[in-house]
Image (cartoon, rainbow, N blue to C red; front, top):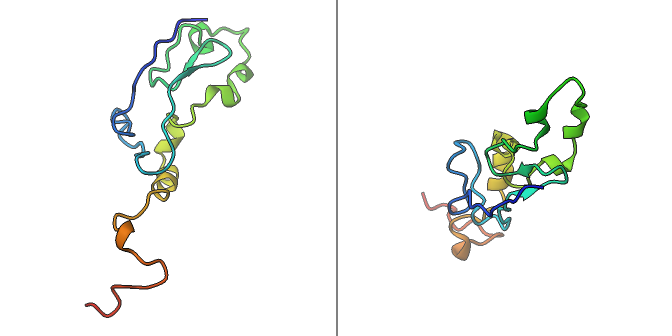
Length: 113
């Protein structure tokens, strides 16, 4: 199994190198560090190029099913979070900017215009 150095791939709970990735800031969900799966492949480092990856050792004898399952998916650095639907899911977990001054059962702006 390869040595895996700890990498910080985010800035302020964002992934600036992925243009459509959501911001995890103020969602209550903490970004997770990359990890090494049971096959020795680094997951979540945004390089997608571990020497031990079946993709780098592909042949007619490699069963594609070897690359299925949760051990191949990073919880916060996965390309699936970059879709509009999943970004919206993350963004919906953020509190509105006016949280200290809002009233959930009263419309304080009613008839103000």
